[in-house]
Structures are given as structure tokens and as C-alpha cells.
Image (tube, rainbow, N blue to C red; front, side):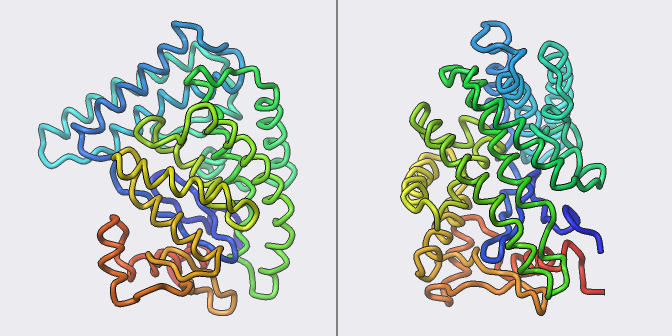
Length: 352
């Protein structure tokens, strides 16, 4: 049986493994209209260029280099996933994507090029700070030793604190590294693909690694938030913002104060139009379930190892669930159930 990313549900470039209790996180399908996305992308690219031209951090240092490349590839991702409703818009979008991809290549030529940390993501849009996307694209599954080695390298670079958080590229680089560290320890292997008798042992074996990575990531996130506040998507891009959000999402049982604080910050960002409402829905539900309360949006549940299906945790006011999900831009429950079931079967369409 194939293990690993064959069982990881991918949504808009984000890989998210489902633990014994949790959710498959489905990102919004677009980054907004092209009119909204284009100025955001221009701002990301300007930050990348400014870091190189103004020398706000050292491009030979890993975190700085990651951040510079991250801003540039985020510009590509943002315009390539913008919504268009006519041919003129599509032509403009294609031109922007081509222009930004050329700029990405020029920028990469000017920074410390480390193929481990600066691998190009599938389609040239959302690159990887580590090896997750590159391995996914090749269908290659790393060993535990390989994952541990990359974690050590990432943490060593961050622990040096050589990249000042006064430099936006340093913040971006750290957020991307946090994303990769969070996901690597959860995605390899995907325990849900295993026979029922092996599932629990698999999660127990992964537990210490996940807890260690989560503890480290929480400490780094608190430091980042002290410096720049909550990293909303409009300001830092989808990958960076999702990295911070994942840390909070995985903090409920071990650091409930952090999760509660981030829930308030995410709600404020959503209300200000800076973060997608789906982030609030998932985090609200995770916080509720962690505190043994019914959820509101039906995002949380678990994979049943016997049936390989996803079982939703208790939800408040089931009759109003569809309306609440629609109001926040979540998929209809039937589709979400289908997507979650597919994950619980290891990414397969059925059990054959």
C-alpha cells in the first residue's frame, strides 16, 4: 500500500494531514477578482525586490533568501488564482503571470540558491520552502530520517536569529518555514491509509515528533506576533498566513491560550477583509471541539479506521448548518463529506 502524500488532500497548494481528530482544510478557490489580486501581487513582488535592493536582510542567509523567494512566488500564485469572468481579464491575468514568473527567475538568480529550501512548486506558482511540494510533485516519499534532517536544518537557520523581524522578508521566510515544518511531520506517512490495526500505532509513533515540532512552531509564532501582529493573508500572502494559522489550529490541547488569542485576531482580520472567513470557521470549530463544546460549521471530525470514512463531531443547531457554512464560503456539507471520506481512504476515490 502506498503511504504518504497519496493520502493527503491538496487544496489550492496547501497540504494538510488529518490527525485522529481534525479536519481537511479546504482553501478558497480563488484569491479574489483580478482587480483585487493584482495590486496585492504587485505589493508582494515589490517587497521581494526591496529586500534585495535595500539590503534589509542578507540574501545569503537562508531565512532571508526564503522570504525573498516567497514574496516573489506569492505574487505569481496570487494573480494565477485570481478570478476572471471575461476574455480580456484572462488575457491580462496571463500577461501578469508570465511577467511575474520571469521576475521570479531573475530574483532567484540573485539569492542564495538552496534547492532544499527554495524548490519550485508545481506549476511555478506556489513554491516550497522545503521539500514537501517538490517531493509531492515527484511522488517521492521521504524517510523519517530525511524529514528529521530538514527539520533540524530549518530550526538551525531560525535559531540563529540572523534575520531581523524588522525586515518583511525575514517575517515571510519564517512563516514559510513554519508552514513546512508543521506539514512535514503530519504528511509523512498518512496514517489513515493503513489497515485498521495499524492506524493507532502509526499515530502514536508520530505523536512525539508532532508535539515537538508544534512546541517549536508555537514559540516562533508568538515571537512573530509580538513583532508584527497577526499575519493576515492580504498582507503576507496565502502560504505565509496559512503557516501561522496552522500553528494555532494545532494548539488547542497544548496551548489553549494561544489558540483563543489567535481566534480573536483571525476574526478581526476577517472583519477587516484581510483574511478568508473559512480560517475563522475552522479555528472556531477546532477551539470548540478542544473545549468539548459543539462546533458551529461542521469542519471537525475524525477518520473511522474501520470504515475509512470521516465522522463529523457534534454540531450545534444541525438544521442551520448549511446556511452557516454558505455564509462563510464553505463548501456544501455533502461535498465536504465526500472530500473528507476520500482523505480517510488515503486519497482514493473508493475502497477498491
